[in-house]
Length: 164
Image 1 (cartoon, rainbow, N blue to C red):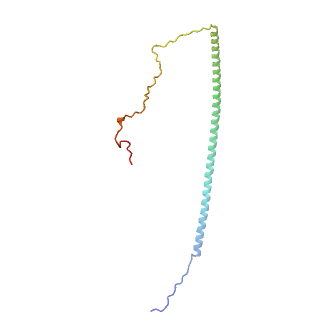
Image 2 (cartoon, rainbow, N blue to C red; image 1 turned 90 degrees about the vertical axis):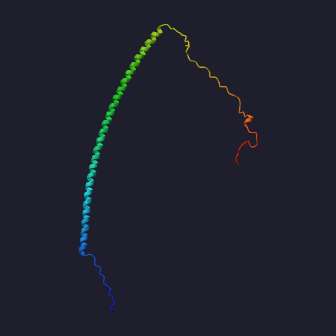
């Protein structure tokens, strides 16, 4: 038998070496530099896209303003043409009315120069004319409700049947 006591093992913690720590720091620094470069590249490209979109929007805005001004000038000229047409039609209508008035005045003057005459005619109804007459009122019977004695039962219990 063994009479010796058990001996506890010795635990020694050994971390990464200084070379490993330096390598990790270098990798982190490389990652940080690459991220900064990538972000700067992305920001530059994004700004170029924004500038291009703004330039395109300005071009479209100018084209729309040009189109609107052309349409406005077209509407103005159409309005002026319509007003001129309306004015010429109105003048023509006034000339026509003046000519009609002159003709009517001349006709009235000619009628007044002749003697006044009066003609009467008698209108007779044709024999086939349809005429209406007043409607005849209906004959209303003035009798009320009559119950004959033979229609009712004369025995006991032959009245109202009410269930209890």
